[in-house]
Length: 177
Image (cartoon, rainbow, N blue to C red; front, top):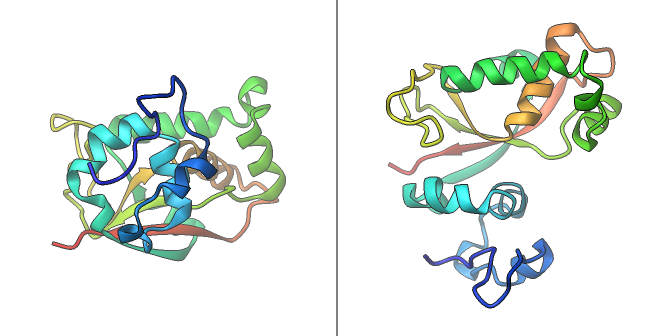
């Protein structure tokens, strides 16, 4: 592996992001820092096992603006879509869910604290989080990272939440195939 591990062998804990990012290889200087933090650092074990082997460090990443219709057209495998819709609905009926830092931020600001990540133009991409036996989505954008943020955005859109922003920053990845 040509990137540092978040949990270093000599330390029984995960490296704080600022320390980790100082170890980030210069050959990946163009890889968005935001994604290093929210995807690689925060979800290290999953990233290392599921995503790194797919060569994601060499994919192209572009920040774009999506409107609410585009947010609702982001796909994922069926079990994730069911969970996302449930989590989004719960945002407005479950006090415990609503009291989390993420829910409070999104309800107060009408947007996610950091952009979610989708893969573009891969309608039949087999998301490694879903497994090969899972029914695939055939949407133009496949959700890669930011499931809870996406769930809350979908829930806010569905209920017509007054503070919801009309547009949202999204990281869009494309594979270099």
